[in-house]
Length: 147
Image (cartoon, rainbow, N blue to C red; front, side):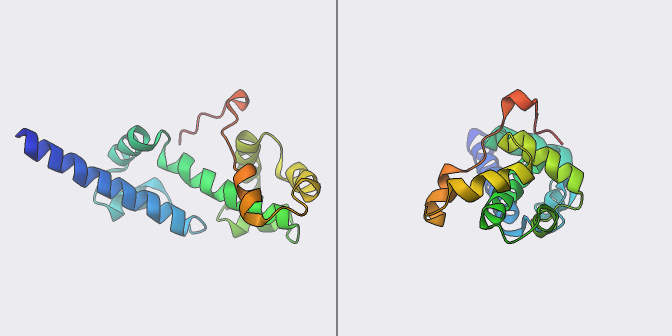
């Protein structure tokens, strides 16, 4: 393969990875798994996972869960849904897994976050609250983000 052909293939792969990332952003509440995401861009699940992690710093599953937790944080701040309702609203099928991942990313369980955020974001515009409360991987919790 020539240098030009290699570069063209790299750009095509990056475009496919971007389509996967965009799909996760749009369809985070749908049942998504790495195999389905990979099929959608004609890649193997292993290759997609490796390339996605190289490009974005985390696996497709970890990225999906981060999107779900971000949305869950927003719904919990509203305060009109239970933690269980929020779990299912963002596409998680297991309350236990949702709570574990939420705690890893946010540093506290969803119920504690809901109680605390009700006071902290009172009077702050939602667009600002979203930015200042965005989850950052809690490295102390030992979450590897691997799937």
